Image (cartoon, rainbow, N blue to C red; front, top):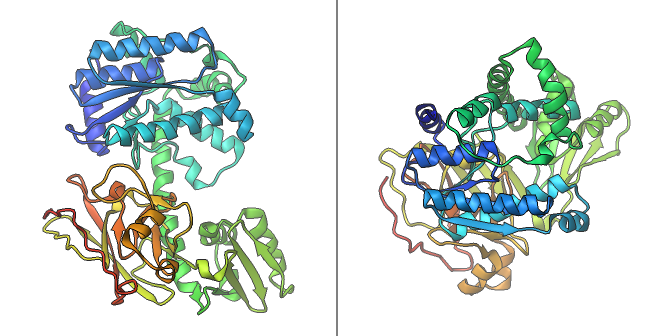
Length: 463
């Protein structure tokens, strides 16, 4: 028997998807993804199958594609596939084959999800994959975020097999006589992950047969610690960081020195500004006497100015940016003032106003960012399928050049644009029936973008 009850309990407990929603399964033909497809089919869920042929193993890759195509036909579900010139893409972009395959497949999955109207992409990571990820992160060096492994849900990516270990998957596939394809590259120790899987984990299992369960429990604890640390760092940032009039931020060195543990909190305080540990170590060594010295990250510069640090963006002043922390409720961006709050969906009414935006709070990644729009920016307009360039939106609204130069956008922590302030929100982060918490950001100014007010024409419903 397939573990249908455990599967459904896991998807419901982690709110991966609702039963009527469409899920696109990433199926390679291997044991894990094929079992995932059988579970979705047995549970009579609404799904389709997508397969990537990376062209790396010749006939073996083509046979995998044929196998997955036939599996989709047997289940009578939609099937889509693509062939990539993976090796050429890796060489052109000077990245590893594994990184190239990852980038190609996830970009393509997202395009197919949008094109065919799927709500989520399901990938077949399991408990043992999560264990391998944590070990690999530890070997390479990681912060707390690398210790909680793989999350069941991340925006549009879901992992419905995280309740199973690799041994459990083998047992279910064998006992149910499920056919699958063996990937010969899985037995090669050429790749770092395979070395962990084949050479390290078996010895660790000798010490602890319940290794995956132990790592899963530990990762939940680390995730709680990370959340606590983020809240504490955000509170400290609001206390210690004083915004100046020209976009700079002033931080008293004396109060930084009093932090304990210093190195950990210093890293967390400056993490949103992309400062690495060696740079912050140099800062600590210098802040007692080298006034005027600069410390740089890819995006920001810290200046030692006697008894204080001055933090500034490396971008030109006209590209002003403001970070919004998760529990920050008063925000200033240039001449605009915003307030934020959280509400539940119970009894919530969404008005058709241009100066307020509503988002599913569980889909947001903090800190958010308010910044000027840039050439090449795009978003997925509310109520529409497909993406749209911000510049094209401005053209359709007939905004003047000066108006365009003063339009801020709200950016999610993952780089997605959430709101063209005063005009349109992004459809990917809208409130839906499963939404529990709502993040609301309101522009308190009577700012109408050179007299032009955009009114949302998509019908809104009472939730």
